Image (cartoon, rainbow, N blue to C red; front, side, top):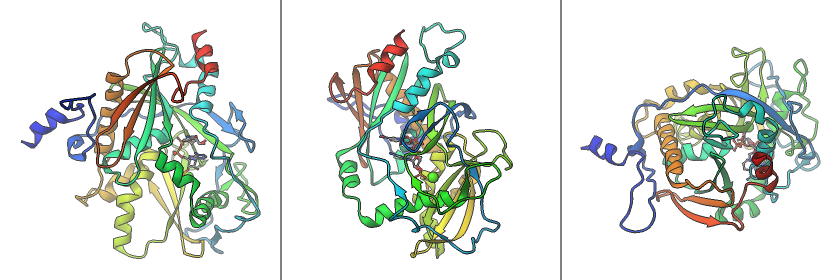
Length: 382
Ligand code: 0WD
Ligand code: CA
Protein backbone atom coordinates (compact mmCIF):
# COMPACT_ATOMS: atom_id res chain seq x y z
CA UNK A 1 0.00 0.00 0.00
CA UNK A 2 2.67 2.33 1.06
CA UNK A 3 4.72 1.71 -2.06
CA UNK A 4 1.63 2.26 -4.22
CA UNK A 5 1.31 5.63 -2.65
CA UNK A 6 4.97 6.30 -3.31
CA UNK A 7 4.63 5.35 -6.94
CA UNK A 8 1.64 7.59 -7.26
CA UNK A 9 2.98 10.63 -5.47
CA UNK A 10 6.73 10.21 -5.33
CA UNK A 11 7.96 13.47 -6.70
CA UNK A 12 5.00 13.93 -8.99
CA UNK A 13 3.17 17.18 -8.56
CA UNK A 14 -0.32 16.69 -7.31
CA UNK A 15 -2.95 18.56 -9.25
CA UNK A 16 -5.69 19.74 -6.97
CA UNK A 17 -9.17 20.26 -8.32
CA UNK A 18 -8.28 23.89 -8.98
CA UNK A 19 -5.18 25.97 -9.59
CA UNK A 20 -1.70 24.97 -10.76
CA UNK A 21 0.04 21.78 -9.57
CA UNK A 22 1.98 21.84 -6.31
CA UNK A 23 4.88 19.67 -5.16
CA UNK A 24 4.40 17.78 -1.88
CA UNK A 25 7.33 17.68 0.55
CA UNK A 26 6.53 14.85 3.01
CA UNK A 27 9.69 12.77 3.66
CA UNK A 28 7.81 9.46 3.23
CA UNK A 29 7.22 10.31 -0.45
CA UNK A 30 10.94 10.53 -1.12
CA UNK A 31 12.15 7.61 0.97
CA UNK A 32 13.74 5.53 -1.78
CA UNK A 33 17.33 4.60 -2.64
CA UNK A 34 19.86 7.40 -2.99
CA UNK A 35 19.67 8.93 -6.49
CA UNK A 36 22.61 9.25 -8.85
CA UNK A 37 24.83 12.18 -7.84
CA UNK A 38 28.02 12.63 -9.84
CA UNK A 39 31.16 13.52 -7.94
CA UNK A 40 31.29 17.34 -8.14
CA UNK A 41 34.12 18.75 -10.28
CA UNK A 42 35.54 22.20 -9.71
CA UNK A 43 35.36 24.21 -12.94
CA UNK A 44 36.40 27.59 -11.60
CA UNK A 45 37.06 29.93 -8.69
CA UNK A 46 36.48 33.57 -7.91
CA UNK A 47 37.00 35.98 -5.04
CA UNK A 48 35.28 39.00 -3.52
CA UNK A 49 37.69 41.42 -1.87
CA UNK A 50 37.41 43.67 1.21
CA UNK A 51 35.38 46.16 -0.87
CA UNK A 52 33.17 43.36 -2.23
CA UNK A 53 34.78 43.68 -5.67
CA UNK A 54 34.85 40.63 -7.92
CA UNK A 55 38.11 39.02 -9.09
CA UNK A 56 38.22 35.97 -11.35
CA UNK A 57 40.92 34.30 -9.24
CA UNK A 58 41.61 32.63 -5.88
CA UNK A 59 43.16 35.61 -4.07
CA UNK A 60 40.83 35.22 -1.09
CA UNK A 61 41.49 31.51 -0.62
CA UNK A 62 42.75 30.80 2.89
CA UNK A 63 44.68 27.89 4.31
CA UNK A 64 43.66 25.53 7.08
CA UNK A 65 45.99 26.07 10.06
CA UNK A 66 44.47 24.29 13.07
CA UNK A 67 45.99 24.41 16.56
CA UNK A 68 48.24 21.56 17.68
CA UNK A 69 45.49 19.80 19.63
CA UNK A 70 41.71 19.58 19.48
CA UNK A 71 41.59 21.55 22.74
CA UNK A 72 43.01 24.96 21.86
CA UNK A 73 45.04 26.47 24.70
CA UNK A 74 44.56 29.23 25.47
CA UNK A 75 40.95 28.88 24.31
CA UNK A 76 39.89 30.93 21.25
CA UNK A 77 38.09 34.11 22.27
CA UNK A 78 35.35 34.51 19.66
CA UNK A 79 34.11 37.80 21.11
CA UNK A 80 37.43 39.50 20.64
CA UNK A 81 37.27 42.42 18.18
CA UNK A 82 33.47 42.54 17.86
CA UNK A 83 33.35 46.22 18.78
CA UNK A 84 36.43 47.56 17.03
CA UNK A 85 37.67 45.07 14.43
CA UNK A 86 34.56 44.23 12.46
CA UNK A 87 33.68 45.42 8.95
CA UNK A 88 30.21 44.19 8.10
CA UNK A 89 28.94 43.58 4.59
CA UNK A 90 25.89 45.70 3.72
CA UNK A 91 23.21 43.01 3.80
CA UNK A 92 20.57 45.38 2.48
CA UNK A 93 22.26 45.12 -0.94
CA UNK A 94 20.64 42.22 -2.74
CA UNK A 95 23.30 40.79 -5.03
CA UNK A 96 21.28 37.90 -6.36
CA UNK A 97 23.29 35.80 -8.80
CA UNK A 98 25.46 38.76 -9.88
CA UNK A 99 28.96 37.46 -9.01
CA UNK A 100 28.25 33.97 -10.26
CA UNK A 101 26.88 35.35 -13.54
CA UNK A 102 30.00 37.45 -13.92
CA UNK A 103 32.10 34.30 -13.63
CA UNK A 104 29.81 32.47 -16.08
CA UNK A 105 29.95 35.27 -18.65
CA UNK A 106 33.75 35.36 -18.44
CA UNK A 107 34.08 31.61 -18.84
CA UNK A 108 31.66 30.93 -21.67
CA UNK A 109 34.23 29.09 -23.73
CA UNK A 110 34.75 26.32 -21.21
CA UNK A 111 31.02 26.02 -20.49
CA UNK A 112 29.87 25.47 -24.06
CA UNK A 113 28.82 21.93 -24.93
CA UNK A 114 31.09 20.20 -27.43
CA UNK A 115 28.24 18.63 -29.40
CA UNK A 116 25.73 21.37 -28.71
CA UNK A 117 22.56 20.53 -30.59
CA UNK A 118 20.25 22.65 -28.46
CA UNK A 119 22.26 25.75 -29.32
CA UNK A 120 22.49 26.83 -25.72
CA UNK A 121 25.49 28.85 -24.58
CA UNK A 122 25.77 26.98 -21.27
CA UNK A 123 26.02 23.24 -21.02
CA UNK A 124 23.94 23.10 -17.81
CA UNK A 125 20.26 22.63 -16.99
CA UNK A 126 20.51 24.72 -13.81
CA UNK A 127 22.66 27.61 -12.58
CA UNK A 128 22.39 28.79 -8.96
CA UNK A 129 24.10 29.38 -5.63
CA UNK A 130 24.91 26.31 -3.55
CA UNK A 131 23.09 27.91 -0.60
CA UNK A 132 19.81 27.85 -2.51
CA UNK A 133 20.17 24.13 -3.18
CA UNK A 134 21.00 23.53 0.49
CA UNK A 135 17.59 24.98 1.35
CA UNK A 136 15.90 22.71 -1.17
CA UNK A 137 17.68 19.62 0.20
CA UNK A 138 16.58 20.26 3.78
CA UNK A 139 12.97 21.21 2.91
CA UNK A 140 11.34 17.82 3.75
CA UNK A 141 12.59 18.20 7.34
CA UNK A 142 12.39 21.96 7.84
CA UNK A 143 9.76 23.19 10.29
CA UNK A 144 10.64 26.82 10.77
CA UNK A 145 11.79 28.74 7.74
CA UNK A 146 10.14 28.85 4.34
CA UNK A 147 11.73 30.11 1.15
CA UNK A 148 11.05 31.92 -2.12
CA UNK A 149 12.98 30.92 -5.21
CA UNK A 150 12.69 32.86 -8.45
CA UNK A 151 13.30 30.87 -11.64
CA UNK A 152 13.84 31.99 -15.24
CA UNK A 153 14.58 29.93 -18.33
CA UNK A 154 17.11 31.70 -20.55
CA UNK A 155 18.72 30.14 -23.61
CA UNK A 156 18.06 26.61 -22.45
CA UNK A 157 19.29 26.99 -18.85
CA UNK A 158 17.15 27.44 -15.75
CA UNK A 159 18.48 30.07 -13.35
CA UNK A 160 17.42 29.91 -9.68
CA UNK A 161 17.76 33.00 -7.45
CA UNK A 162 16.47 33.44 -3.93
CA UNK A 163 14.16 36.26 -2.86
CA UNK A 164 13.86 37.23 0.76
CA UNK A 165 10.52 36.30 2.32
CA UNK A 166 8.82 39.09 4.29
CA UNK A 167 9.49 37.03 7.42
CA UNK A 168 13.25 36.70 6.78
CA UNK A 169 13.54 40.38 5.91
CA UNK A 170 11.91 41.31 9.22
CA UNK A 171 14.15 38.85 11.04
CA UNK A 172 17.23 40.33 9.40
CA UNK A 173 16.26 43.89 10.23
CA UNK A 174 15.29 43.11 13.82
CA UNK A 175 18.13 40.75 14.63
CA UNK A 176 18.96 40.87 18.33
CA UNK A 177 22.31 42.00 19.66
CA UNK A 178 23.01 38.42 20.81
CA UNK A 179 22.38 37.05 17.33
CA UNK A 180 24.58 39.71 15.74
CA UNK A 181 27.39 38.77 18.07
CA UNK A 182 26.89 35.06 17.32
CA UNK A 183 27.22 35.78 13.60
CA UNK A 184 30.45 37.63 14.29
CA UNK A 185 31.74 34.72 16.36
CA UNK A 186 31.32 32.37 13.38
CA UNK A 187 33.56 34.61 11.27
CA UNK A 188 36.01 35.08 14.14
CA UNK A 189 36.42 31.31 14.42
CA UNK A 190 37.66 31.32 10.81
CA UNK A 191 40.34 33.85 11.77
CA UNK A 192 41.65 31.49 14.45
CA UNK A 193 41.67 28.49 12.11
CA UNK A 194 43.03 29.89 8.83
CA UNK A 195 46.19 31.53 7.52
CA UNK A 196 46.58 33.78 4.47
CA UNK A 197 49.43 31.70 3.02
CA UNK A 198 50.06 27.93 2.82
CA UNK A 199 52.81 28.06 5.45
CA UNK A 200 51.46 30.92 7.53
CA UNK A 201 49.84 30.96 10.95
CA UNK A 202 46.48 32.46 11.85
CA UNK A 203 46.43 36.09 12.93
CA UNK A 204 43.44 36.38 15.25
CA UNK A 205 44.13 40.05 15.92
CA UNK A 206 43.23 41.05 12.35
CA UNK A 207 40.01 42.68 11.14
CA UNK A 208 37.00 40.51 10.34
CA UNK A 209 35.58 41.77 7.04
CA UNK A 210 32.52 39.89 5.80
CA UNK A 211 32.79 41.39 2.32
CA UNK A 212 35.64 39.00 1.65
CA UNK A 213 34.81 35.64 0.11
CA UNK A 214 36.39 32.85 -1.88
CA UNK A 215 33.98 30.84 -4.02
CA UNK A 216 34.33 27.58 -5.90
CA UNK A 217 32.26 26.86 -9.01
CA UNK A 218 31.37 23.22 -9.47
CA UNK A 219 29.63 21.14 -12.07
CA UNK A 220 27.75 17.97 -11.23
CA UNK A 221 24.67 15.94 -12.07
CA UNK A 222 21.70 14.87 -9.96
CA UNK A 223 19.65 12.19 -11.74
CA UNK A 224 18.92 13.65 -15.17
CA UNK A 225 19.74 17.25 -14.18
CA UNK A 226 23.11 18.86 -14.89
CA UNK A 227 24.01 21.54 -12.37
CA UNK A 228 26.43 24.44 -12.26
CA UNK A 229 26.65 26.23 -8.92
CA UNK A 230 28.98 28.33 -6.80
CA UNK A 231 29.53 28.18 -3.07
CA UNK A 232 31.62 30.10 -0.58
CA UNK A 233 34.49 28.05 0.84
CA UNK A 234 36.23 28.77 4.15
CA UNK A 235 39.67 27.26 3.50
CA UNK A 236 41.75 24.55 1.86
CA UNK A 237 43.96 21.89 3.39
CA UNK A 238 46.45 21.02 0.65
CA UNK A 239 48.27 18.63 3.01
CA UNK A 240 45.18 16.73 4.07
CA UNK A 241 44.05 13.26 2.94
CA UNK A 242 42.32 14.77 -0.13
CA UNK A 243 44.64 17.03 -2.10
CA UNK A 244 42.39 18.05 -4.98
CA UNK A 245 39.61 20.63 -4.97
CA UNK A 246 36.79 20.48 -4.06
CA UNK A 247 37.62 17.61 -1.64
CA UNK A 248 40.52 19.55 -0.07
CA UNK A 249 38.18 22.31 1.11
CA UNK A 250 37.13 22.54 4.74
CA UNK A 251 33.94 24.07 6.08
CA UNK A 252 34.26 25.77 9.48
CA UNK A 253 31.35 25.96 11.87
CA UNK A 254 30.68 26.97 15.43
CA UNK A 255 28.12 25.44 17.72
CA UNK A 256 27.02 25.65 21.33
CA UNK A 257 28.85 23.18 23.55
CA UNK A 258 27.05 19.84 23.88
CA UNK A 259 26.76 18.57 27.45
CA UNK A 260 24.49 15.53 27.25
CA UNK A 261 23.62 12.71 24.85
CA UNK A 262 20.20 14.33 24.40
CA UNK A 263 21.82 17.60 23.31
CA UNK A 264 24.04 15.72 20.89
CA UNK A 265 21.07 13.87 19.43
CA UNK A 266 19.23 17.11 18.92
CA UNK A 267 22.33 18.60 17.27
CA UNK A 268 22.45 15.62 14.87
CA UNK A 269 18.77 16.02 14.05
CA UNK A 270 18.41 19.72 13.49
CA UNK A 271 21.82 21.19 12.81
CA UNK A 272 23.91 18.46 11.24
CA UNK A 273 21.40 18.11 8.37
CA UNK A 274 22.23 21.68 7.29
CA UNK A 275 25.96 21.16 7.67
CA UNK A 276 25.79 17.92 5.71
CA UNK A 277 23.67 19.33 2.86
CA UNK A 278 25.88 22.41 2.48
CA UNK A 279 29.13 20.46 2.23
CA UNK A 280 27.87 17.37 0.42
CA UNK A 281 26.54 19.38 -2.54
CA UNK A 282 29.92 20.81 -3.66
CA UNK A 283 31.96 17.80 -2.51
CA UNK A 284 33.62 19.46 0.49
CA UNK A 285 34.95 16.50 2.44
CA UNK A 286 35.43 17.85 5.97
CA UNK A 287 33.65 20.11 8.42
CA UNK A 288 35.47 21.33 11.49
CA UNK A 289 33.30 22.44 14.38
CA UNK A 290 34.34 24.67 17.24
CA UNK A 291 32.20 24.21 20.34
CA UNK A 292 31.74 27.43 22.25
CA UNK A 293 31.07 28.01 25.93
CA UNK A 294 28.63 30.73 27.09
CA UNK A 295 31.53 33.20 27.47
CA UNK A 296 32.39 32.88 23.77
CA UNK A 297 35.47 30.73 24.22
CA UNK A 298 36.16 27.65 22.11
CA UNK A 299 37.56 24.84 24.18
CA UNK A 300 36.99 21.87 21.87
CA UNK A 301 37.17 21.11 18.16
CA UNK A 302 35.61 18.19 16.32
CA UNK A 303 35.95 17.03 12.73
CA UNK A 304 33.04 15.62 10.76
CA UNK A 305 33.74 13.79 7.54
CA UNK A 306 30.90 14.72 5.22
CA UNK A 307 30.65 11.21 3.75
CA UNK A 308 30.44 9.63 7.21
CA UNK A 309 27.72 11.85 8.65
CA UNK A 310 25.00 9.41 7.61
CA UNK A 311 26.57 6.83 9.94
CA UNK A 312 25.91 9.12 12.91
CA UNK A 313 22.19 9.36 12.22
CA UNK A 314 21.17 6.11 10.58
CA UNK A 315 20.33 4.36 13.85
CA UNK A 316 17.86 7.06 14.87
CA UNK A 317 14.65 6.14 13.00
CA UNK A 318 13.08 9.56 13.52
CA UNK A 319 16.13 11.35 12.15
CA UNK A 320 16.61 12.82 8.66
CA UNK A 321 17.82 10.72 5.73
CA UNK A 322 20.28 11.92 3.09
CA UNK A 323 18.43 9.97 0.37
CA UNK A 324 15.16 11.78 1.15
CA UNK A 325 16.92 15.15 0.80
CA UNK A 326 18.48 14.22 -2.53
CA UNK A 327 15.33 12.57 -3.95
CA UNK A 328 13.32 15.63 -3.01
CA UNK A 329 15.84 17.90 -4.73
CA UNK A 330 15.69 15.72 -7.83
CA UNK A 331 11.89 15.94 -7.84
CA UNK A 332 11.98 19.70 -7.27
CA UNK A 333 14.29 20.23 -10.24
CA UNK A 334 12.05 18.01 -12.40
CA UNK A 335 9.08 20.11 -11.23
CA UNK A 336 10.87 23.30 -12.35
CA UNK A 337 11.56 21.79 -15.78
CA UNK A 338 7.89 20.89 -16.19
CA UNK A 339 6.58 24.28 -15.07
CA UNK A 340 9.09 26.72 -16.55
CA UNK A 341 9.07 26.01 -20.28
CA UNK A 342 9.00 29.45 -21.93
CA UNK A 343 12.49 30.72 -22.71
CA UNK A 344 12.32 34.37 -21.64
CA UNK A 345 14.64 36.21 -19.21
CA UNK A 346 11.80 38.61 -18.31
CA UNK A 347 9.49 35.83 -17.24
CA UNK A 348 9.86 34.73 -13.61
CA UNK A 349 8.15 31.86 -11.87
CA UNK A 350 8.23 32.40 -8.13
CA UNK A 351 8.29 29.12 -6.20
CA UNK A 352 7.17 29.53 -2.63
CA UNK A 353 7.31 27.15 0.26
CA UNK A 354 6.18 27.42 3.88
CA UNK A 355 6.49 24.61 6.44
CA UNK A 356 3.42 22.41 6.51
CA UNK A 357 2.54 23.14 2.87
CA UNK A 358 3.49 21.86 -0.57
CA UNK A 359 5.66 23.97 -2.91
CA UNK A 360 3.48 26.28 -5.02
CA UNK A 361 4.25 28.94 -7.61
CA UNK A 362 3.10 32.12 -9.27
CA UNK A 363 3.98 33.57 -12.69
CA UNK A 364 5.27 37.12 -13.26
CA UNK A 365 6.15 38.86 -16.50
CA UNK A 366 8.48 41.86 -16.16
CA UNK A 367 8.61 43.95 -13.00
CA UNK A 368 10.31 43.59 -9.66
CA UNK A 369 10.91 39.83 -9.73
CA UNK A 370 13.09 39.83 -12.87
CA UNK A 371 16.60 38.92 -11.71
CA UNK A 372 18.78 38.23 -14.77
CA UNK A 373 20.69 41.50 -15.33
CA UNK A 374 20.47 43.19 -18.74
CA UNK A 375 24.27 43.06 -19.14
CA UNK A 376 24.14 39.28 -18.70
CA UNK A 377 21.28 38.75 -21.14
CA UNK A 378 23.11 40.87 -23.74
CA UNK A 379 26.44 39.11 -23.20
CA UNK A 380 24.94 35.65 -23.50
CA UNK A 381 22.83 36.57 -26.54
CA UNK A 382 25.84 37.79 -28.51
O1 0WD B 1 22.32 38.29 -1.65
C1 0WD B 1 21.82 37.20 -1.49
N1 0WD B 1 20.53 37.03 -1.48
C2 0WD B 1 22.66 36.01 -1.28
C3 0WD B 1 23.99 36.10 -1.46
C4 0WD B 1 22.04 34.77 -0.86
C5 0WD B 1 22.96 33.68 -0.72
C6 0WD B 1 24.28 33.84 -0.95
N2 0WD B 1 24.79 35.04 -1.32
C7 0WD B 1 26.19 35.19 -1.56
C8 0WD B 1 26.93 35.52 -0.33
O2 0WD B 1 27.13 36.87 -0.27
C9 0WD B 1 28.24 34.79 -0.48
O3 0WD B 1 29.20 35.55 -1.17
O4 0WD B 1 26.69 33.98 -1.98
C10 0WD B 1 27.89 33.65 -1.33
C11 0WD B 1 27.76 32.39 -0.51
O5 0WD B 1 26.98 31.56 -1.23
P1 0WD B 1 26.69 30.08 -0.77
O6 0WD B 1 27.97 29.40 -0.49
O7 0WD B 1 25.78 29.55 -1.78
O8 0WD B 1 25.89 30.35 0.60
P2 0WD B 1 25.75 29.43 1.88
O9 0WD B 1 26.10 28.02 1.63
O10 0WD B 1 24.39 29.73 2.40
O11 0WD B 1 26.77 30.07 2.90
C12 0WD B 1 28.15 29.83 2.87
C13 0WD B 1 28.86 30.92 3.63
C14 0WD B 1 28.31 31.14 5.02
O12 0WD B 1 29.00 30.32 5.91
P3 0WD B 1 28.22 29.55 7.08
O13 0WD B 1 29.29 28.78 7.80
O14 0WD B 1 27.56 30.59 7.89
O15 0WD B 1 27.21 28.64 6.39
O16 0WD B 1 28.71 32.15 2.94
C15 0WD B 1 28.53 33.20 3.88
C16 0WD B 1 28.60 32.60 5.26
O17 0WD B 1 29.91 32.76 5.75
N3 0WD B 1 27.26 33.81 3.55
C17 0WD B 1 27.10 35.08 3.30
N4 0WD B 1 27.97 36.07 3.33
C18 0WD B 1 27.49 37.28 3.04
N5 0WD B 1 26.21 37.53 2.73
C19 0WD B 1 25.73 35.25 2.99
C20 0WD B 1 25.28 36.54 2.70
N6 0WD B 1 24.02 36.80 2.41
N7 0WD B 1 25.12 34.07 3.06
C21 0WD B 1 26.06 33.21 3.40
CA1 CA C 1 31.49 28.46 7.58
